[in-house]
Picture 1 (cartoon, rainbow, N blue to C red):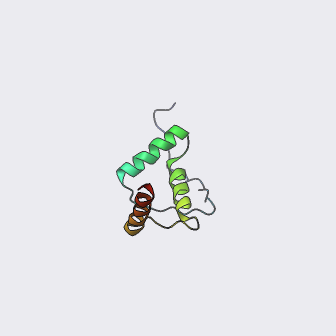
Picture 2 (picture 1 turned 90 degrees about the vertical axis):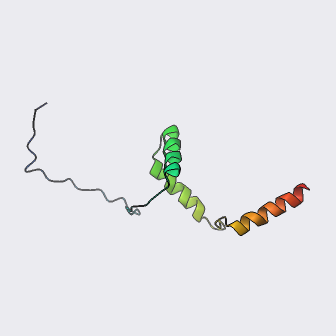
Picture 3 (picture 1 turned 180 degrees about the vertical axis):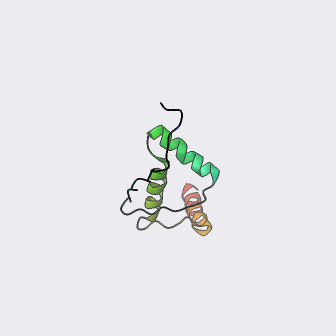
Length: 83
């Protein structure tokens, strides 16, 4: 291996544009990112792929975000059924 290399005439290689994907910057809580990275490591997959899959699941028809009112309603129903 050489001690130094001359990159003065180097050119950046062509970037492969993944079809159907867009590069963005997003802020994610540290603990959320750590959980996805740990899970990805355990499964041998990429953490960004897992985050993308989680977002797709949340978009499925019929999935509504869990709001405080929805949570209260579900808890009342479950507590009533258990009584």
